[in-house]
Amino acid sequence: MSTSPLAHLAQQVTDLLTSIAALSTLEELRDAEASLTGKRSPLASLQKSLGALEPEARKAAGAELQEARRVVETALDGQRALLARAARQSSLEADRLDLGDVVVGDVRWPLSVGHPGLISLTQRELEDVFVGMGFTVADGPEVESDWYNFEALNIPPAHPARGLWDSFYVDLGEPETVVLRTHTSPTQIHLMERAVADDSLPIHSVMPGRCFRRDTPDASHLYSFHQIEGLVVDRGITFGDLAGVIETFTRAYFGPDISSRLRPGYFPFTEPSAEFEVTCTICRGSGCRTCSSTGWLELGGCGMLDPAVLKAVGVDGEEWSGFAFGFGIDRCALMRHQVSDLRALIENDVRFLGQFS
Ligand code: PHE
Image 1 (cartoon, rainbow, N blue to C red):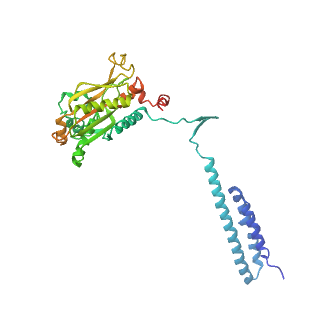
Image 2: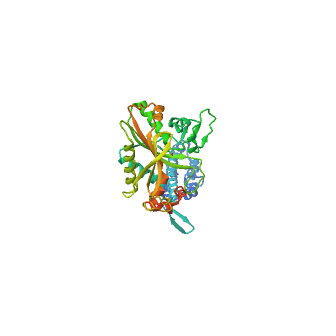
Image 3: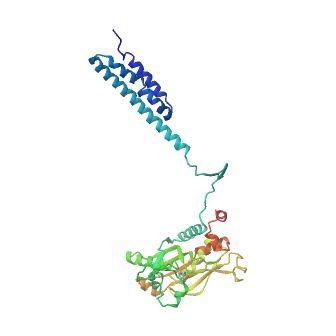
């Protein structure tokens, strides 16, 4: 009696599974595939040998062989998935971008870390000083209607004071005039309108932000600059409160040997108005080229809220009074750090900025 062609099938399957498990790369697997399950595989030759069997026995052996093939193919698929995963993992690791260093040729350049700009740093410091004095910080839009930038601030269309602010107009094809705000004063109007609407007066706020004017850029002018506006609306506010806030701020920000003084000035939205000056930060008051030998540098404008402004926003001037001030953040940065050219503030040269850590 001849032995069944499948007598060693179990052992053959075991051997196949062992060789499959030993395949260590996808290429090896691809090369080995034909000899494991293809036409030249042991399974294929067993298949052929079944032809010699009786029909009954052939059927049983065929089923047994099919099951063996299923086991081997499942093992092969499993190994293929395993190797594909490993290959993907190692290619991900090889392709990993090292963003910590720049490598040019063989030289590795350590990346230097950036630095906040001097304007942002100054703005934060100014906010800190005012928050310490009890002010809140508020924000307003950079694009304004004519109403907010001018009219509500008591500067009607034909008012000669419009010439004080060379404006960039935005042509939106709308009947309403739209302007890039020329100062942060329009934010006063927003704050007062909101406080009237929510019945939330008093206001003690500062409003830092970017402004735009049609200046010719040079060492002390740029198209775009930053101001910080202050607004107090409360009961019984006097010019003495204004002068006290300006002086307290000046010493807190510039140091105890720098003080402030107010000189008569003119702004349509304040009455009386004043320009405020601080001791020259270069010569500390003794007189130098920067302060034209006066010992003082002009920082900004201020004054008591004009009744026309209170009326425009619907604040009852019988009950409330207040003051406002506004000055350049960029100018503060120059004065405090004795930088002579505004343009240094926007060039973002890290060698310059690194000095202000
Ligand atoms: N908005 C004025 C300017 O830009 C400054 C200012 C603010 C003056 C508040 C008085 C009160 O010149």
